[in-house]
Length: 216
Image (cartoon, rainbow, N blue to C red; front, top):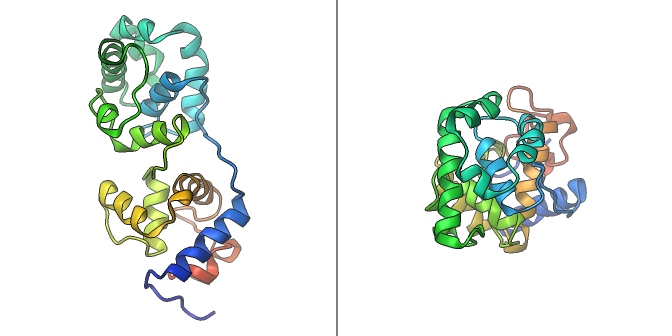
């Protein structure tokens, strides 16, 4: 198989998007179970260094126990730590969840804000979490740089950076705006099932023809 050029061209980017759309469809989906904006915010905060599957197990009970932002804002921190223990980094997560819940109530009338500036001003909310909310709740074009997006975007030579913010801006420059949210969903699925970090299945990969890192 001829080696694919590492140059980022409009043609190669268009082919990448076309293949991803054909392989994974253009359906919008979120892997974190939620019924509203504040539940997704808390679930995303819990997902740091934790699998979505584990978070969904934890939030199934958590959101039945704490049924509102007010309940989280006045939660006993030690009890909340126990409730979210299995997601890891439970001390910081509990502190940030209580803090962010109170800030949303005090600053935003109990409504999760939409802007990147207001979201990242909340305790424990970085650009990744903010972009999950912006994309899934407000349908604002956004790019979420998780470990899969970072790794696969570098394999595709759509970025050379390691810093998530720089990767986000690199991808925003080369991907069509209408593809931003879809790219997140598709690449995360691809990273979990095909382009697995320790054992990439290059022989099964539909992106072979556009991936400079393909080992076939």
